[in-house]
Length: 125
Image (tube, rainbow, N blue to C red; front, side, top):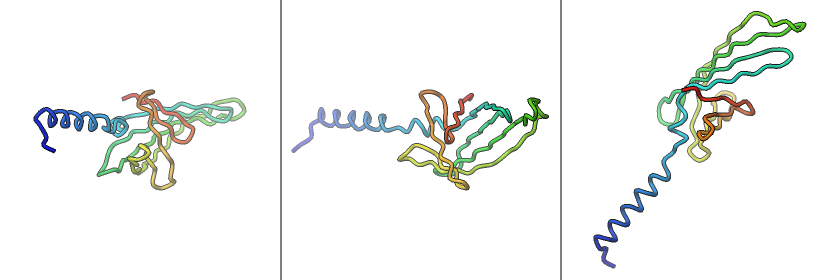
């Protein structure tokens, strides 16, 4: 069967459309800064995750946490912790897996957020 110019054009448009539909918007969404605040009877904490791409499907995540321990109903002085995580992007699940402890990081571009387990972080940039 010989392909006409019209058929070739339709085929090219179909290929471009399929490629556009399969663009990984999650991967484009990942880099940035995400924040979470949590509190309870014994502590209050603010978490910041800064996610940056590395080589291939690898990402570096800097986690910074500020927290106050609550004892006898009184908030103690502010304390800080930092961690550096390495993570690998899984194209099939469109999520990151932190390599040391295996934490799963799931992204929700439509709500501008991510989840690490049950903890939700909002993207601020």
